[in-house]
Length: 471
Ligand code: FUL
Image (cartoon, rainbow, N blue to C red; front, side, top):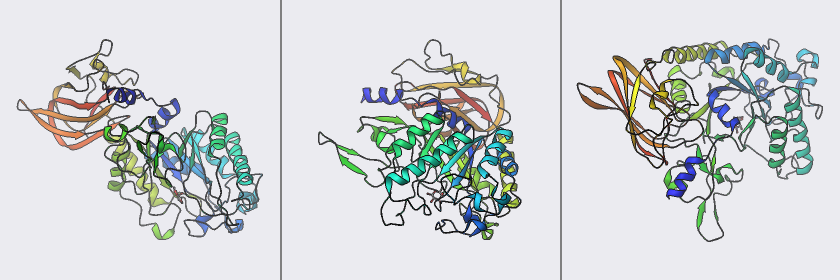
């Protein structure tokens, strides 16, 4: 067990995974022919003539994302119906046969350019399932078609931060089932966009397991390797050679990385969660949902659970038939962004000092206040329980504490926060995983001293940031 825990403590993220975790919050844009048919899943036989977003304005999409504090945008370049938002040379089923800009337009290009201009990153969603393409189900032929489209998207539109592969899959028109050549897709992505992560049906970022924005209390970064297998959904368990039972996990399992889970495993991987949900009930725009935009409270609940719970937040925005983000969604995004900006504007722990029950040489505990993610405190190796006492140097009223582990490992399993009042320590918050970021939100308290007790951790915990806010 000790060896296993040391091993788990040393599993590290790739730079591309770290980069996405640091983005924290980004948007999904579901926009295609479905926007004009009022459907969620198109059949693939829709006429491109109905696609005509006369007021399309990519800058308005990007501004809406920026208002909310998002750092990137992932566009459905092709959804399950097969209609391409760029003039792919491999199909006629695209914007080039639509009336929009007389068939001369390219939505992907305009959105990629707007992202670059607006200083946010651009990512692509390309549905492997394609209900239009005739070769679908004839596996080698369709794989070639899909690779060609992927190549177009990854070469013609500048830097791509993410390729999002959906798990949804259906039968081909000929009744055959398509066998996707995932490895070939992944190699192509690594070759053409080495900094891009591949999400969901991909090795870098895992699906949180639901589309409702429900977040786990413990979102582990280090999980069993079987979670990265695209077959894991079909086949949940298997016998391994020596007869020992190794469970195969999928993204919907409740516990994906506690000691209880990993102790049966031989191979662990860094595979952090992304929480994807839509600002409205549907992924695509439906006028009937104009009054069903999620409330500020609902969105904040998902934000605290995901960004504040060691996951990223992918919030879907569905542009309408004009090609604009609807006024109601825009207003909510601005409200959300204002709330987040106001809450986290002033770190009340700047200038605080701390004492730790133990410190490894070279990792002075006061670096947790210096705002530098490369500096971190940790105790001697093998010390799994440790306490840090923070002195704010004045009685301060606050209602948030933000903790971060050093971004290259995930070790904390259980912790408690306490504050001092009239010479006594009182409970403030208790939690499990910290990881990239844990935001602890509670009712206002006034105190000068806060104590962090790490009661369970893997080999030796690290803390790189300790921040205090009053929202
Ligand atoms: C699902 C799809 O079937 C939905 O249409 C949507 O794109 C969602 C993000 O993923 O699997």
